Length: 265
Length: 253
Image 1 (cartoon, each protein chain N blue to C red):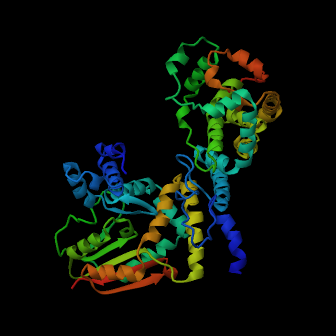
Image 2: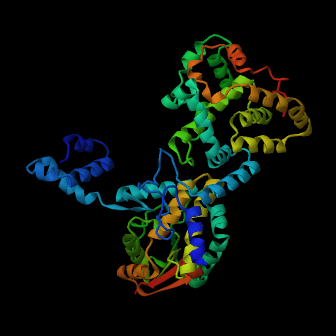
C-alpha cells in the first residue's frame, strides 16, 4: 500500500521543483531550486495550498476582519488565472510597461504632496480624497507569499494595490456593500477565483434591504461596467495622476453608479 | 582569491561582521595578509562566531536567543488555542501525566522554567538562573528546553539550583519509535501545522520553526545522556504517544 501511495504523496506533498522522495525531503525550501523565489516567498506543496485555500476561505467567512485570509485565498487559488492576466498584460503596450517597470503603490513610492496639489477632479486628487475619506492607506497590503512564480507574484501584488484605484474609479466606499460591488467588478475583469468567491459569499452578511439593492441595481451595473472596460491592470495609474477622473471613466466606459452607496449597509 | 571589497563588510554590525570574516577566511584572506593586525583580530573573533540551528536554518549562537524570543512573543496570544488545535487537546494529557509523575505535595519547592513571555513571574535565563544553589525540590520544564541555545548549560543550571535529592523533570517533543506513525507524524507536522498557524494565528513562520525545532532535538537516549552529563543520576525516560513526546527524569544526589 505504501508503495502505491508514495508517488501520490510525493506529488501532493512535494515542494515545487523538488524531485526527491518524501522521506528524504527537507520539507522546507532551501536554496536548491525549491527555495524562495522572491522576498517573503514561502514555497508550498499542492496539499498545503489546498489546505490553505480551504482554511483561509472558512476563516475569512467566519471573521471578515481577517483581510490577510482573503489575500491568502487569492494567492493559493489564483495561479492559472494570474498566468492569463499576465499574458494579457504582456500583449497590451501599457500593461507590458507595467510588467517591465513593476511600479508599486505605497506611501513611500507616492508623492502625496504632489497629489494633493493636483486639480480637483483629477485622478490623483480624487484617489487621495478616497484614501482620506475612508481612512485607508496604500500600505496595508501584505506582500505576496504563496505564489510560486516571481512575475505572477508581482501581478497579484499589482492587482491588490490597484484595488483602491478601482474604488475611486467606481465611486464605491469601503463599507461592506461597496467592497462587494468592487468584487463583482473585479470578478468579471480578472476571473480570479478569490474575487468570484468573495462576490458570491460576501453578500451572506448583508441585511435584506441592502441585498435587494445589491442584486437589483448594483451587481448588474458592476457586471456591465466590468465587461465593457478594458483590463484595469493595464493602466499605468502612476502616469495618469493628472488625467481627469471623468475623462478616465469615459475612456474605460465606466458609468456613474445607479445610486449613492454610502448610506446603505 | 578574496577580493578586498567583499571583506570590507566587517565594518557593519557584529553579526554581518563575523559572517563576512568567515567568508574571507575560506577565500584565503588570512594567508595573503599574514602580518596584518586585522587578520589577528579576525582569527580571535572566529571562535565567537559559532553557529547553531534555528529549525532547519543555520544562525549564529548570539542570534538564536533573540529569534526564539520573537517566535514566542508572536505566538503568545493564540498559544493555548493553537496547542489545542495542533494536538487535538492531547497536550493537556501529556501535561497531566507530567504532574502525576511529579506528585507534588504542599510545601514542595517547585521551579517551572520556560513558562512564557510577558508573565508577571520571575524573568530569567535558563542558562543562568537567578537563584541560589540547592534551592528547589523539583525543577520542571515543559516544551521549553528544545528552544534553549545551550541545552547543556540549562541542564547544569537545573542541577545547580536543585537540592540534593531533588528531581529534574522534562516534558519535551522526542523521536517517534514507529516508522508508519513517524511518516504520518511528519506529514501532519509539515503539511498541516504551518497552515494551521497561518489560518488561526496569521503566522506561518513560527509554526514552521516549531516543527523543525522538534526534528532538531536529540532522541530519547541522546537526551538521557546529556542529562547524565550534567550530573544527574537515575536518569530515566518514558515515551508518550508513540514517542511524539517523552518525559525525562533525573535526580541530584
